[in-house]
Amino acid sequence: MKPALILASESPRRKQLLSEAGFSFDVVPVKVSEIPNKNLNVNDQILDIARRKASAALPLLKSSRQDAFIVLCADTEVIFNGAPLGKPADRQDAYRILKLLSGKYHEVITAVCLVESSTGKEVSQTETTKIYFRQLTDDEIWTYIDTGEPMDKAGAYGIQGQGGKFIERFDGPFYNVVGLPIDLVKNLLSKF
Figure (tube, rainbow, N blue to C red):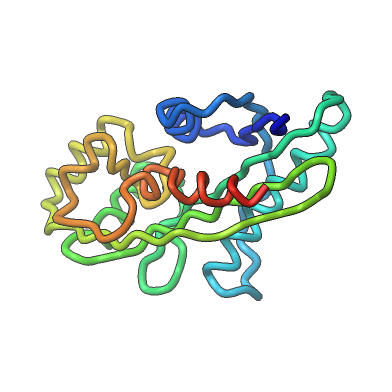
């Protein structure tokens, strides 16, 4: 019997993507510090945050479950000029981020970490998508900010929502930008 899959995330987008992909899973939200370890390169910083989420979720889940399970954690960052942009702190910060991305390219990196509860086996990997933004006017940026959509998203936009209209093109998996590269998840799960 395959172990149960547990999504350790507060992200409604990750939950939706897993559901739409046909996975059966439970959700257990976890909160950890998402401050990156500056001693690591950007890819490893993002992997480190996903691993921290798994480390926080495992003891909570082990204390409440008798069955074996696989915990799935992820972290997504928007990288511009080699540095993570994070989520906007407020409306002005959202404007700053979107203005920075306007007319330029950036990368979206998602780290996926899976850990099996009974063996402690971990598999993790990152996925990268390159995004090209068209030139944005100040009016477009403020109108978008007024929707509230950018406020809880890395890079201050959602490709699957109204922010998608800012994208000229992208190279790499679409769902990676939404927050969970489903093909990578399937690949990593096949290793258990």
